[in-house]
Length: 52
Image 1: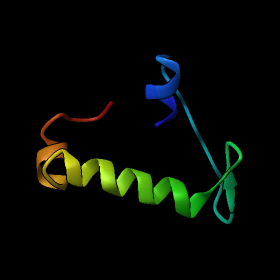
Image 2: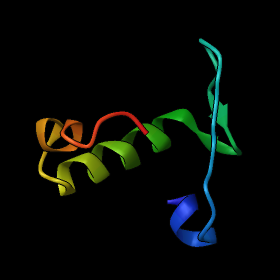
Image 3: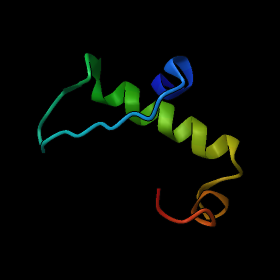
């Protein structure tokens, strides 16, 4: 979502146990990613693109 807002590439990283990433709760980021992948047709369809 941040990339869409800024129009620039975004890189995020976190360590095991981190609860906040880029100022947002980790759970919120995971939920956004889940919704994005579902909107693209599910994981199988998303995986067709390969790694970014």
